[in-house]
Amino acid sequence: MIDLYTAATPNGVKVSIALEELELPYTVHAIQLGKLEQREPWFLKINPNGRIPAIVDRDNDDFAVFESGAILVYLAEKTGKLMPEDPRGRSLVMQWLMFQMGGIGPMMGQANVFYRYAEEKIDYAIGRYHRECRRLFEVLDGRLAEHEYLAGDYSIADIANWAWVRSYNWSGIDIEGLDHLKRWIDALYARPAVQRGRQVPPKANLGATDEKTKRNARSMLA
Figure 1 (cartoon, rainbow, N blue to C red):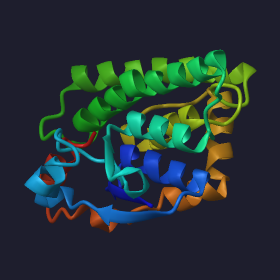
Figure 2: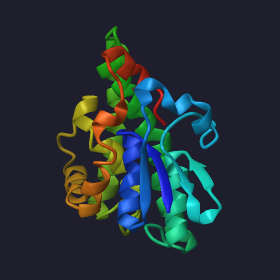
Figure 3: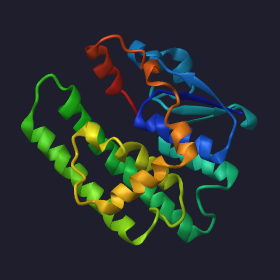
């Protein structure tokens, strides 16, 4: 049994989708970000960085894993699914997973801050992150022009990137002309496990009560 500590964020959605795809039993613990529950001592024992998501594998001596990418790798290796075992195939998955962790996630996160949440709208910052996100999307589109999925077969790399890319409209990013990216977004939306996983937990579980608190909560997502 996996204990999942999460909230309704892109990084949280990555892990719940993976758990659904892998058909692993799990218990959801919705973390109230707006109430800073992720900074409480009990949670810091699970994730010393005070971010979501995190898991505890009760079947592996209560082993805790934090950082969404690390969790995806752990779950894939635990089950032998969603990542090839051969070195070349595994490397491809890891490359596109790191692409999301080092590029898509941070850049879209900054775009969200300046486009949606910042009290002062700074055109330079908004433009800078929108342009960089669009560039990264074009990289994905180019890859998907020649491959159905990012690393050959459907994998944790697709889950990780999709969890962020699907919210392009919220981030204010234009995907006009990126037809291969659009095809891939729609294809993953159609997967039943993706539909189930993206609803975990309900968005109401963010626990924020006002706009300032919501901004504070989202600024601390991992």
